[in-house]
Length: 176
Image (tube, rainbow, N blue to C red; front, side, top):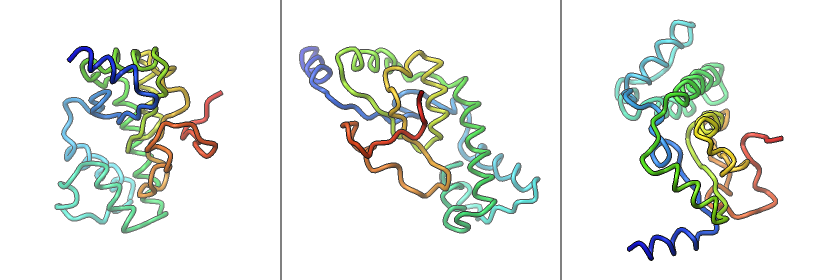
């Protein structure tokens, strides 16, 4: 088994990680339903009605709320405000996210053997970057952090399915 694992790691040229789950528990200890309800409450206090049924609200947490609002009101002020609120929550959570056991050494190992690494996530790429920077892992991924873009419902860039180099592979966050 150890030999097979070594071959798997050293033979990988490109590795695409998910973020919340494979690398960390972003909202460790928080219930998705409670978080979604909190986002909706804050927006409604600002006078922005969120057109969701209880079933939609309970179905999948804040990302389900975001998708439902994107379908109901694409390009709206409500959608923009919800995206901003969720990004703020994700950035706060990145500071206290719990690492997935053994993820850090796995990332460092793949990076050390020359594999190109990327992240594809439905969270804000800035939250992934904040977490990775805090763990000393940002350099392992370089600019290849692909996440939710403003105007949710839009798919991630097509190249996130492969960390292979491509002229049209543009990072979601610019790097110096």
